[in-house]
Image 1: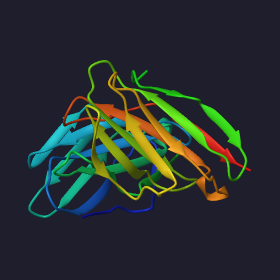
Image 2: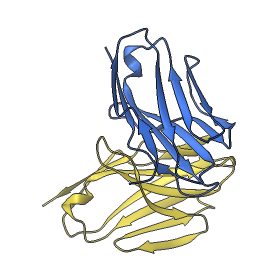
Image 3: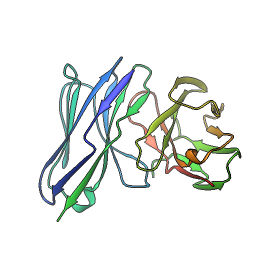
Image 4: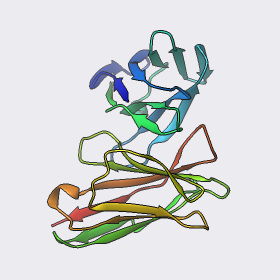
Length: 109
Length: 111
């Protein structure tokens, strides 16, 4: 089976940097995803890691350590529009994608 | 626009009724996934199809069923509806492995 843990809520200040952690346990691993979801809207893809290391994409970076079952999403130069839920998801052996419960990020002025 | 189309966008029905949600995947995507998201809850995986065949099953209730047709569109059937079935139902598609592209969701309200 799969188990994914991430903090329920985080608060950060506009212009700052925030790191959202995700730990997981899975049988079979085909990659780890981060999605952003605004309330009532569809999740949108942010990043994908399948090998260990850091993937950078503009203001967003994601890190993976497969041996530790650990990932983080780093958001830089926070903007008010970054207030959303951030979902960590693990893709298992059958490519089934299981989501964590999400981290609700509130960006304050 | 992700390229995944879901209908209807909104649906209001009564307890005990049956509804069908429809999903058209992105052109060329063989995999279709269904997720349920209740208020303030995470995305719960229901079921996955690949090229017409069921590939993986999550915590899908026996009252729910799904299928993927030869043209790759998929339908999720929800029967004997209960108040607790009120949720956003998302469909997503992907080529094989990799990124899932989500539709806008179907919001079901059971009264």
